[in-house]
Length: 437
Image: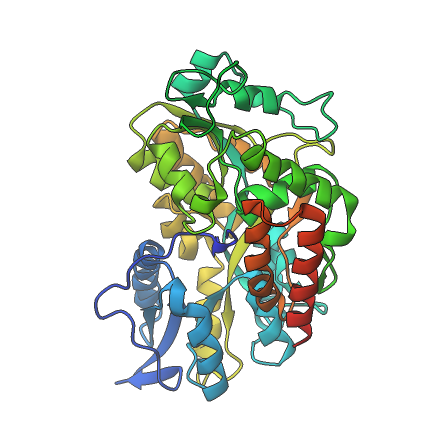
């Protein structure tokens, strides 16, 4: 999200009626057909899976797949309980922050043992994310990278070329901050680079700087040559380039006033998205998980360009969702067949063709690109940011607990209540303490 939203990939939505039952012993028999349970947190993608599994069941009449929805708000509290009690679904979605704990504790089936050769057909960066201790633990399902959405009217009026922007904490080569100031306007029509600009009466912001790990923070850190994690622990407070990048983001909010107040964005993950679709933010750095939101919500012409360039280049985070299988499944053979299916182009195509996300199977990727091409959106900026040097999403058996412990402190930093250096040290200490348990 923040990375949790994927995430952190796709926005969690209300549970579909009748779709929330959790699968008892994880798999059961209905007549002569074996039922394999499949759990995820996104309602729209669940529709695509049901389409996919309808075709799977035609080809495998002895297996039924029960798609279960558990909303994001409950997903990560319910899953540990179900795994501990042996009632988890046979197959379930996971993200990088959470799978390591279950892999290390022997709760997952190693993918290599059953689908080893098939992984050559999958997105390499996501395969790498879910490879731990020499084994692959998940079948890549979705992935996303980061690009820059822009309001065509607003950037044209300000004379800003969004594709050429570079940020630089040293200042000399920084073309982004001057552009963001030109794009920030108060109620009297004055821009943030003009005398008399009133930062208490802003009607249009230049950029969506916020405590959004996936969309903002990690990309600035990566493009400044910093790091966020070392092994399974956090190291961001110990990295001068990371501290420098976070200071730059916080200054965009509290010093330069070219982004919404953290008092709004800390408590509402979607605040910046809402402002962008209302025409009140000119530049919005985010992932393909917001394509449909912007297409449906923006009443103006918009486009995509590569994410902001920093001193270390354009270095963005690539994140992915994978499907993992419970080691306690009572129907291993049927579960493996379903895993194999969702690791094929045919199995994953409904997700891609519906425009929901970049698929984890590379052969299905053109279907996603074509969907958006027909809508007049060129996805090349996302594709470009997914190759070359990228920034890894945090991984580890308790990295999720670490992130939860750090988040209130990071919020204080973005509110301007804690200095960046001091705050990052407190956040890192709290995070690593939580990781140790």
